[in-house]
Image (cartoon, rainbow, N blue to C red; front, top):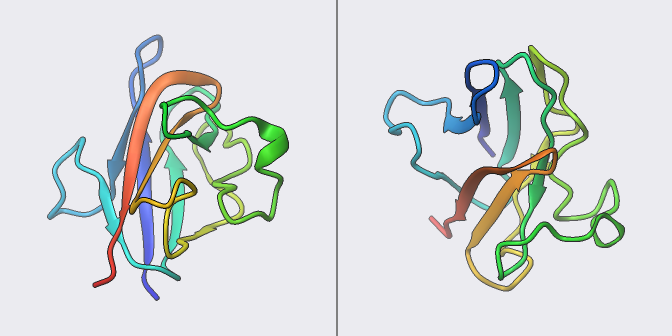
Length: 120
């Protein structure tokens, strides 16, 4: 069960991006993880962020449908220069049944990323 980190990077006043914190993954490429891997986000910006799952239409899933502790709850709000809490345990499939979890920052919804769930 590897632990993966996704960096939230960006300059003040600009749209932040999600970058997998691995030398062999290009900026903008998705994280490829297996079920039961742990994922955390490292906020390196001066803004607060909150990774949040998207539905099949690319819209944030309503907060009432993703309570803290549920399978698709990605993170609490992440202050500047902090890491996410809790770590996210990768499920066997995305909420829509696919193998790709698409997410945004709930506070800046134009900031998008994805995690591909691999069966190895």
